[in-house]
Length: 65
Image 1 (cartoon, one colour):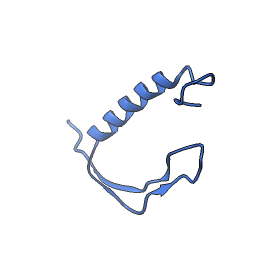
Image 2 (cartoon, helix red, strand yellow):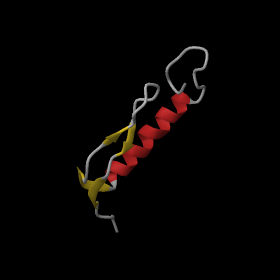
Image 3 (cartoon, one colour):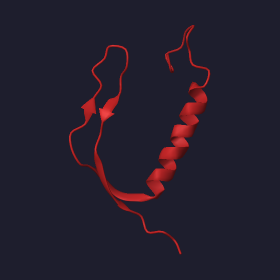
Image 4 (cartoon, helix red, strand yellow):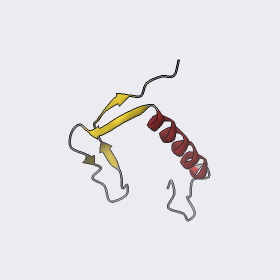
């Protein structure tokens, strides 16, 4: 289990959360006008709560010279 706790708690879960936060923070600085480009497809599972597909459309942010 990624972050559910208990006996099978993933030892790398905290590091994965920090990495994901850093990655998404950097991605958001490089994009503007982010919007959904289609329906969000949720995972159908009693074990995993997540998103299977989430199409987005964005305009790249201007790159400093």
